[in-house]
Amino acid sequence: MSTHLHKKDAPNHIKIAVISVSTTRGLSEDKSGAWIKKQAKKEGHEVVIHQVVTDEIEAIRELTEHITQKICPDAIIMSGGTGISPKDVTIEAVKPLFKKELTAFGPLFAQLSFEEIDSAAILSRATAGIIQQSIVFCMPGSIKACKLACNELIFPELGHLLKHIKE
Image: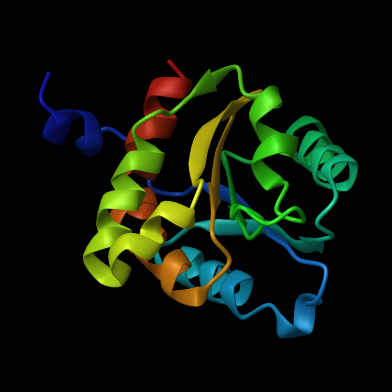
């Protein structure tokens, strides 16, 4: 079956959780999370939660587990904490929870980033996977990175991915 047929039968209305990882920003300063929330609604999706969590493995993991077990969104879009500094621990917190990893997301994001920011794209450790029945995307916290990942990779494939998870 072609991807066009798969996408044709994919759900259009998706429940999304938005999580921003930051030790310096609160919800009112979370430009990237606010943009993701606004764009998700524009795409016809429902944002079931938008929260900022501190850059600590346990805090990120606890919030992610709470959301996947109690709120049960179709997708979680996380921004921030994917770099290489010691405080960037989103990947360490979330990746062990994956039952499946979407291994193409990181390289595709890096390729698109390289086209925009050259070799600095090597600093990102963007990743995606499945936790419970939720697709989880982890990407850098900059507004440019969020727009790039959401517009070029996440939103165009979200329904298609969800269709396969729910089979």
